Amino acid sequence: MSGGIGLDIRIPIGAMFALMGLALSGYGWMTNGVPGFYDKSLGININLWWGLAMTLFGSGLLATARFKKP
Image (tube, rainbow, N blue to C red; front, side, top):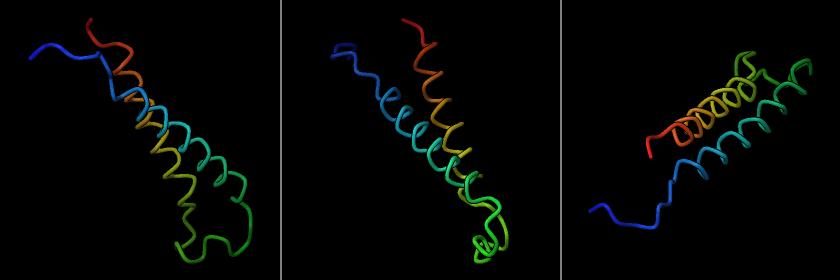
């Protein structure tokens, strides 16, 4: 089946992950020096690292959607 409306789901999902990842990593960057803020996560800035991972994942989805074969 090769018909369809031509919707590539990687574009909106990639954009959502990239934007949310940027917001989360920005929040992690802003709260990086707050004493006691990351005590529950053993001192690891979870917001920053997962924000970067989400941004990379979203960027990867957008890149594969951009450079697909027509």
